[in-house]
Image (cartoon, rainbow, N blue to C red; front, side, top):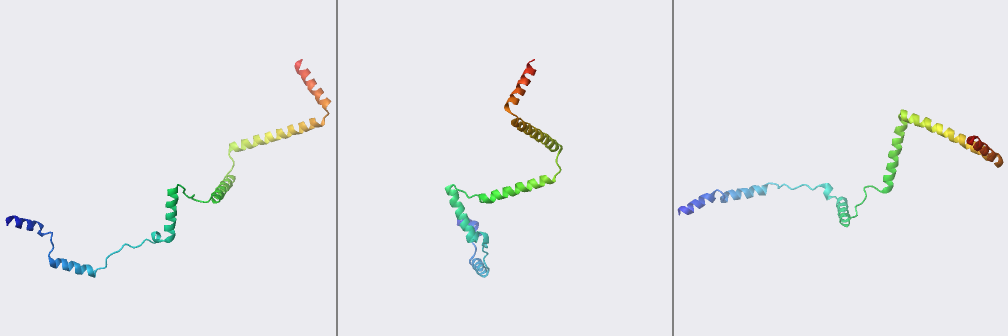
Length: 141
């Protein structure tokens, strides 16, 4: 008997009496049990359909692009245009000024060369040959 009493005492605190269990059941019936609220985003039909499509595409290895190609090209052109406008508003740097002056000098030189070559085209051939011969004879002496 001593062994039994020791076992009953040990587990006695774990077993609630009948009256306590009845009180808990009565309280549970009176209380409203909390439920998790549905997430409207997750419950949306469109979102579920999109998610299914993405999973399907992912399984096939074909992921949709973020934006259509035409839209991305248009946005790229708009960004480039915006950058050009901003750069046009800034004053030119020293390097840009020197490059512009050099480009202008080269253009002037090219125009002169073009005019000279056109003048030479209008000159008869024997005159051109004679000028080259004169030039060769002057350089050799």
